[in-house]
Image (cartoon, rainbow over all chains, first blue to last red; front, side, top):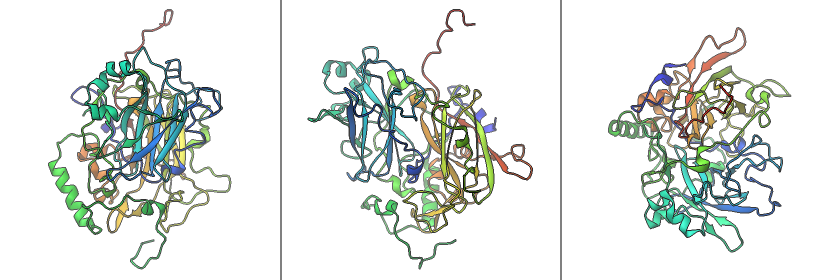
Length: 197
Length: 275
C-alpha cells in the first residue's frame, strides 16, 4: 500500500484518486459489440433511449461516451455476470454507447419499473474529451406526474432544472434524453454524499 | 520524431471535429502562457481539493464542455446503489497482458503495472472490471483520429482488461507508452500515461482517470494533469517505481493503488447460518 492511499478525509474516508478526462482516443478501447443493446432490438417491449450531447455553443459533441444503469421492467435491480458478453439472454441492466459524429447516442432497452415505488429513472454517467471528470445524472421516465412530483431530487430543483432530467416521450414510442454540458438548458448534474473532499 | 513547422500532415478527425472557437479564443498560446494560467489557477484554488477542476481553461477543450452550475446533491437510490456485474465470462485472463500478440512482440520498454483498487472505507474492490488503454512506445494510438506522425506497432493495440482479485488487486503487463504532441497550445506534449476505467460496487463510484510515470518532466507543463489543483491530489495519479515488481532480465515494475469514493448501502446482515 503506498503512502497516498493512507491519507484520510476529514470524514475519515480514504482520499479518492482524482479523475481525468477520457480523452479523444477511447474509441478503440471502451465501446464493444452491442454495448448499447441492453436487450436485443427484437425483444417485446424494447424501447430506444436516445438523444444528443451538446456543448456550451449548442454544437453536438461527437467524442463523448455514455453509460446507463437501470432496473428491469419489474423494478428489480438484478444484473448478472455477462455485462460485456451480449448473449441476447442475460439481463445486465447496464449499457455503454459512444456518441456518433452527429453527437447522438442510442440505447435499446426496456422501460425500467419503479424501485420500491420511487419514480423510475435511468442512472447516466457522461465522459467526453474536454470533460475533466465524469458527470452523473438521471433520466427520469415521463408520464407519471404524481411519482415525479414526489421524487426527492426533482422536488429539490426549480422547474427549468427539473425539466432537464425528464426524458421526452417521442411519437415513435422512443424516449429522448438530450444532454447539455453547458449553457442554455444545462443538464442538472449530480453529486452524491461522500463525493465531497 | 519532432513536429516542425513545415511538417505537412492531414488534420485528424479530432481537429476537424473540434468545437467552433468561442469568442474567448485567442491565437494558439505558447507554453509560457499556459503555464502562467496554471500557476494563477493553482494560487487561487482552495487547498485540499481532491478532484480536477472541470472549468480549467488551460485545457482549451474544456471551455465549452463543463457545467457552469453547481452539482446538485442527490441521495443515491435504487439502481445507483448497485454496479454492473462483470466476471470471468466477460474477460479472458490473457487480456491483462498487452504484450501478447500472435504475430510477434511489440517494441518498447516492457513493464508491469500492478496495485489494488479500494473503496473509501479501505475495503478491496473485488471481482470488478478494470479497463486500460494507451499509446504505443512511440506515442501513437491505434485510433483512426490519431494523426501523430509516429509509427503504429503492428504487434501492439494498447487495450487491456482484467477482473480484480479478492484483495482488489490488478496486474497488467504492457509497454511503457510514449509521450505525444497535441494541439492544445504550441509545442504541447502529453506526459506518458495509461488511461484507467474503474467500477466499484455502486454506480456512484464509477470513474475514469489517467496514470502517469514518476519523474516525467512533462507533468508540470500538462494542463490536464495540472487541472488537479492540489499537489498531493496530483501525486495520487503518479505510479511508483517498485524494484520488487521488476523482473530479472524481463521487465520493470510500477505500483499504483486506486481509491474510489465511499459506498452508501448499509452492509447486509449475515444470512442465518452464515457466521
